Length: 203
Image (tube, rainbow, N blue to C red; front, side, top):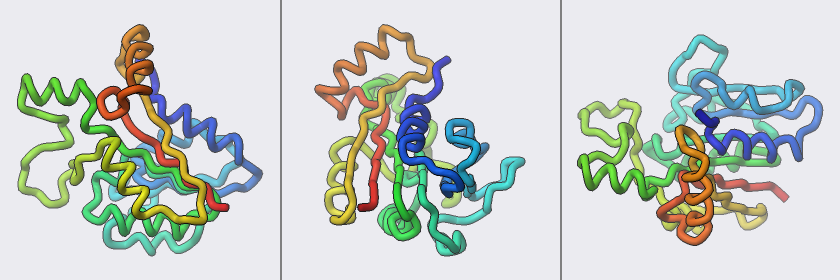
């Protein structure tokens, strides 16, 4: 089993800008998996809605983002924004509280395997389900390459440098399939990319 490629990409990005006592805020930290990929001298803070046997700050990012209370050099939000009721407010808060670098990962719900799953089984992923519970751990938004690009274009900070990195699926993926998808994903990101990483650097 391969590690999700986004963690290695985020690791490389952070190492390029890292300095002693740099602060990093990991939103939607869960079990703090991202912490394994950053230098030990970085001051790491995790945030989540639930406690997972670690020292995460427990904050509802839809309602109480301001409880974070201070700015961080780097803010990472990997596969979080699609779970929130107010993604635009969340994005604006992330820009407000990040001093140097903002990393937001968006899953691609138009990925070809998800399309096939819906065609054959009538189900997108286990994050799209009907339970009737407003606080259920599910996706609120259908994110894909086109609407992610449009969302960023309409709401980006004009004084920041913006890059969208295409992420190709590696987890539970045979190597030759990964290579095929990587080639096709460069041509047809809407169909063959697993997710998209927004890298927003403050000037």
